[in-house]
Length: 68
Image (cartoon, rainbow, N blue to C red):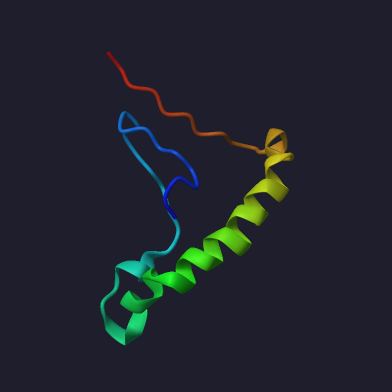
C-alpha cells in the first residue's frame, strides 16, 4: 500500500511477509491487487498499531546501521 509505511531508499534491507505473493501459480499473483491492499489497510495496519505499544517487551530488537 503506497505510503502506509515510508521506507527511505537508504534502508539496506526490508523484511516482509507474504512469500506466496511472489508465486505465479494457483492464482497467487491475483492476490497482489485490491484485496491485498484492503487487507493491509483494514487488518495489518490495525494489528501493527495494536502491538506497537508492547514493542519494549521484545526479547530481541534488530537494528540495522550502515557501516562507513
